[in-house]
Image (tube, rainbow, N blue to C red; front, side, top):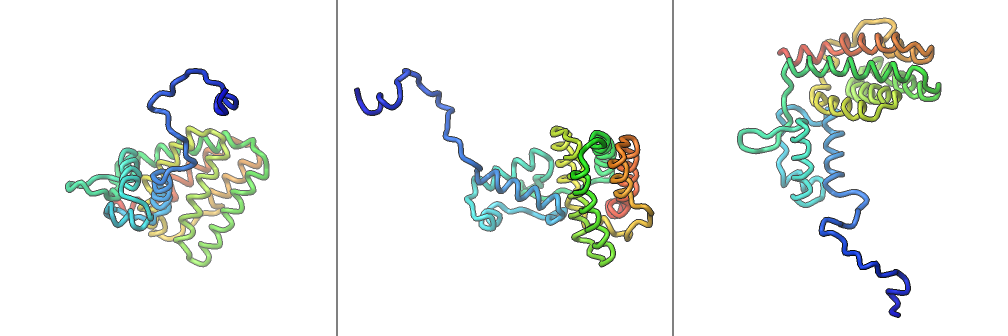
Length: 232
């Protein structure tokens, strides 16, 4: 008996052609995730052209995985192809922004309602994020406030423990991310208490409807700067 047959029985099974070794994470996947985060955080602005070879150099990868990452985002409508076939960051129309707002209001409200009975430590995370947002407002560090606001809303959706809903909401944030730098074009909204505080208080009381209503107020009235920018 050979050493191979002694250590592993020969079943006579032939593996199909599509079986490939599983790698921990592909280069294309890493580039895709980095681009997604950049879009979500407003680091890529509308009309920015993402040329294949310069992007490959910046990521330190070859053109093939870079192209795969870009086209994957094109398929998700997070990026677009212009008339010359170049990948660009698209502009949002007013109708698209209105639709995104309506879907976010529904889905994020559902997540907040579902999260109304979660552990206090999970709500503490939201409170810590909002405290940082308040500090940014005081120091007028609006760029960081934008990123923290995104973090707050995604953390709120994770609280609801609805993974499919979370995936959809995250993609909506990727779609509107490139214009988030205009969130404070009209200044900091003059409301007291802040809807984030109302959301946190409702979660602590386990009041699902109050949490849903506070999310609606935040989304519908907190994005006036975005709408003013798109209308202009």
